[in-house]
Image (cartoon, rainbow, N blue to C red; front, top):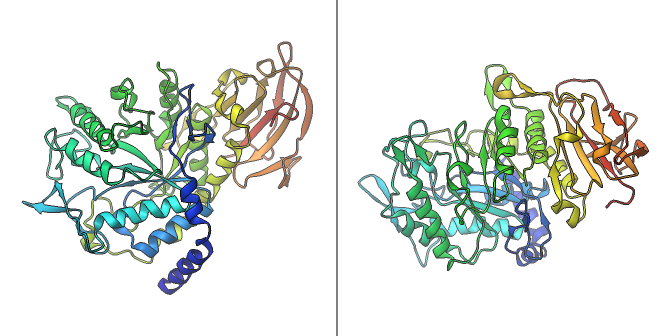
Length: 490
């Protein structure tokens, strides 16, 4: 397997040699759209972030493995990854045996990074990952430190042995790491790290704000994208930082039963800021005989995006750890049977590209005018049931603000009754889009090209309700997207 991996990496490198540098040169800084709902490029063109969770890549993978991982994700249309700068607990080395910091009394000293001017070091390897992503047109969401390094225990926030950042040093460390990578145009910053900012008497808001200030200062206080990664089941980023200027967009971590209402809550805040599901359920997450399959990956993605999210973050239980067990010491663990590599092509991973394909169908103007609108749906909009709400009968709708197009997701193939009076007059065409394979369906036959199954449906103020019956039977996993648009909308 290792020889095969080396061959694939070499082959990919040869194929990429003429294109990767061009991709890196064409990458430019992202910023928030004027309406406060989306991320856009420097030239104001649309950007839909399709993100893969790669928390531990910085210390778990060698260069060949990094290249293989990044190239695979590029081919699957992921345009962003998220990672943590240094290990979340204890003091392990990276795969090459390099430490990020000097160690004092058994703990990292975050103000003493180990920098070897004439030798490849920990920070050079991190830069290799960031540059490798840029060469493939991939952005990197960078967490300067996991929340355990600041806010202590996940459950109650009490300080413990892994805490190394405090109000006295966190800003200086953040300044250093930001300044170290200030010239890399493909970085988005993320503060937090699966922690609440407040745990009763433990209030860490000052520390996280100091980290944000340090990141900004390291980039000469120039505008940059930054958010906060909260913990699950508790308040999300908007609870503490929505009105902070450094918070460019909100981030949510929730299980499916709470994801839609969390996105809707953020969407209705003032001033408007983009929001999204930054961490949800991971593919192959298990509890007994219950499991998060590709269907759960799709339903939480389409539901939150249609509810107002500006992008989506995918995660796989066996990939984001890259062979390391939760809470384990990297020095004592080995990657067994390259399990993370085998899971790079699991169904949910491959199917995420069909979401970005659908979202980027629209013109730049239409994309930036998209709004959530459940009033499009007549009748019951469904619910989430089962463990963490992993079974969905939800119908979720989004449309262009001018009513010239709409997309409605039926999680289990239930009929969709549409208030056609919410759409632009006088006629609308209808299409079925299959989120499992990215194809269009006409009368239960799939086509690679988009074709309408129904034309000239009356729409506008006096139009009657129209019911649409998705292909197949109502069943878990038989999800469909109803796409409605005026002729020559795009």
